[in-house]
Image (cartoon, rainbow, N blue to C red; front, side):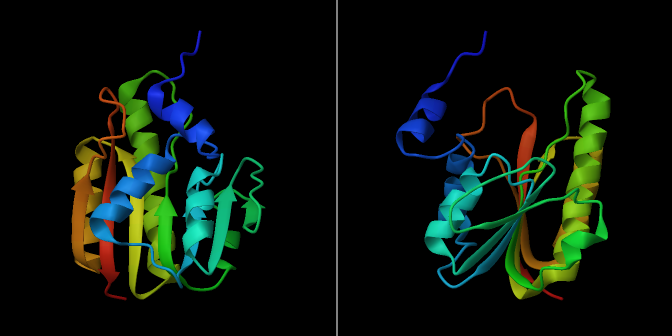
Length: 183
């Protein structure tokens, strides 16, 4: 049986679709990635809490996910991030990725699938980010995740690994933050 935790109850009470919004809020409070007039692309946007947060702050927000996602005042597209259609939405000030694989229970397989999704999000970011744009990507920690962080560091003025306090303590997820895309 699924047990709701404190963060999930708080999200529901505050009108958010998921507890993951607090991870984004924590990252944004620390790094100031998302600003008032930004145009934001959210990859892996379902169920929509990151879209909800960004729509309150930004001039334009676009979400992409394989699952249908409906958030007021936000354009969402039911797409696989591995299709080239993700490049059809123009340039962005911020690219967010909370993409995660459907987990299999095999940690090595799940880590590698997470790496593939995160690497794809980074490929997308490199093509659609404006100069000095910002990037956040979730990845499951592994040897491959270190390789991805090294690549991100080559393309941004500053790149950091960050584990939000609002992540579950047992979770292998970590977020890589890229500030000021070098283009």
